Image 1 (cartoon, helix red, strand yellow):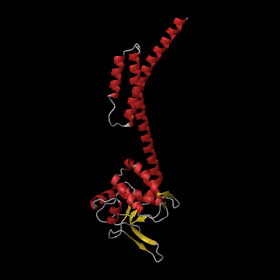
Image 2 (spheres, one colour):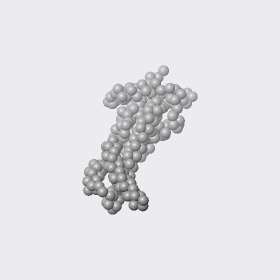
Image 3 (cartoon, one colour):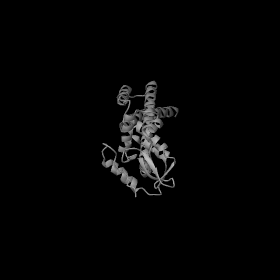
Image 4 (cartoon, rainbow, N blue to C red):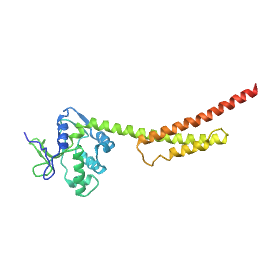
Amino acid sequence: DTHISTTPFGRRPMTLGMISSQVAAKAMPADLTVHKWHVFQNIKEARGALGATDRALAILDALLSFHPETALYGDSELIVWPSNEQLIGRANGMPPSTLRRHLAVLVECGLIIRRDSPNGKRYARKGQGGEIEQAYGFDISPIVARAAEFKELAEVVRAEKKAYRVVRERLTICRRDIVKMIDAGIEEGVPANWGRVQQTYQAIVGQIPRTAPRQALEAIAAELEELWAEVREALESFVKTENMSANESHT
């Protein structure tokens, strides 16, 4: 049997993260099948959680394109061996130093595994029947092995984006409602300390930063909703009182 390369060529150090990636790849079921571009989409969405850069993902995109199959199997050959020039070409061009840096990011994130040859070159050796006996390059098996994890991470990111969008909508609607209700209250002569209400409103909306974590916006939305309820109560009470007065005057 040919010994499978597990350590990087040259001065690149071996890390526990690399071993972890290799262990995960080794443990994946042989019958596991994934659609590489679906997995890639999940990785793109979860890139923040994975620590991957956009440039690194452009390289991963290129690496995946060097594998001829769209469906990747746990028991199939999952090593690609493009040269740096080929990779740079498919990744829309970048200096070799940038390529090396972002390849290192992919390795650190556990998205690929280096399978370096004794001399560091990437190539495949074929057997008599033309099948690949030994390949040196980049092992993309983590794409298969960690596909479920990437999907989960992407779902978390999507859920967070949705929650952020929802709280932004809450803020917008609440602000609009309060402003219009205050205007209506003043216009209709509803007895209330509208100056204080306006000040409270301004103080709350003054807290809304241009960019903020969702939790901060949730807290501000909750404050606004309290004020909304207070203003609404004042208007409704006034309307009920007016209606009662009107009814009494008719009796």
